[in-house]
Image 1: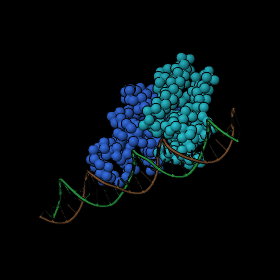
Image 2 (image 1 turned 90 degrees about the horizontal axis):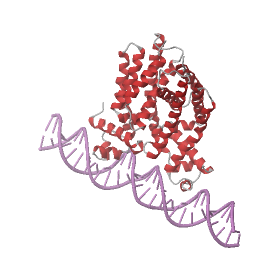
Image 3 (image 1 turned 120 degrees about the horizontal axis):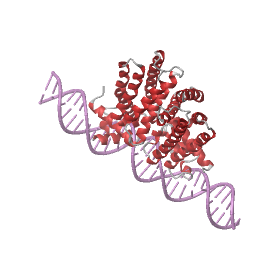
Length: 192
Length: 192
DNA sequence: TCACTTTGTTAGTGAACACTAACAAAGATA
DNA sequence: TATCTTTGTTAGTGTTCACTAACAAAGTGA
């Protein structure tokens, strides 16, 4: 999909956004970081917007395994657990993503980018809500609480955990805290 | 605290960030929106960073009642309910805030602004965790789940709800959805 | 009336931005 | 060897940015 140079540009852009904020994501900064000239960048992306779109696509590609792994469990609570832990595993292995993608407002002024982010978020939300629903149908998950609320709590607390991790300078272990959060979440929603 | 003109500038800046993104928050755009010249702005704020700091301060001031109301309930679950609903009430009455403040990444490159946002978020989190703890001590809230996790779930799902509301173009009623989320949350955490 | 403060104006600064024109070197293909 | 494609270069474009210098009008207080 991406050439080697394109991948390098996308990763450099991600790194710059993570470390210095999107206001410092300039063609010059990307080019300098890589060690080529500005116009050389335009051989690989036609403009800056295409680079930003590629940053999101790259994130989506890296996150795919987290969604695919869902189908490997039969138990719904296990599916939820692997959804949470797999997300956190990927993010802690790619810490630059945390600041870039969990801050969708970065892309606020570009309609095309908002749409791309929104779709990604909604997709996760819907998949998770379906998992919760089937768990409720199987009597694994309590039914006195709506699947929408449960899915919101899971994704919301997951996102907030990553935000806290990112804003704290990553001082705590994301996966360890995530495991605790996940266990507590399971205790709350399991059917009695 | 703020003069009339300063308040107008802060509100205009908030509106621009909400509608057009922070990349379009320029001195010229603020000035044009108000109907004065660019240099006139500098009579009221010494530079752009001061305007951004004022935007956050203004948000904090508006949110204060939500924290003060906490002490008006004795019951911990009621405290949590009023925390959630009061936040959502203020945000739905000031919808520009939703996009501005729940996107802390907007301010990522300015250390001073990150700190200001981070403090605000941590303050809420700690207050809420204390409320949960006292609820656990009073046997109102179940104790098999850590107060940290519960506070994270509450704030996380609250933030995510606002994010969804904001990114969907505010197509649903924030307070109605919030009430549902709040009721479900109470069901999950109440002691048996 | 006269000085001072406040709040505005017009006209401009240098720096940074995304992006382009024109050209060069290197490798692949014929 | 000759040609074409790919990927780079230097030098530049016009635009926009935050911010400033210099000046003006209006209100305030003596």
